[in-house]
Length: 77
Image (cartoon, rainbow, N blue to C red):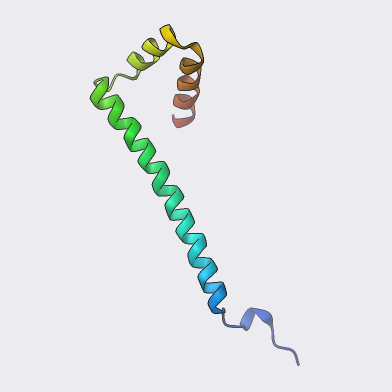
């Protein structure tokens, strides 16, 4: 009678691949958290926490930048 594959113990390769998958997810999550923290720090320190100052300044110089900032703010809300 053949053994059910679900009962096989994971191989070292399986374990290593699971570790790599988890490590990549942790790195990705950490990178995103870091970028958001940098953005938050920039707004708090450079613009006294007033995001509208960034929108107003960007709109007068670079319309596409203002649109991008607005889209980002809407996604993060």
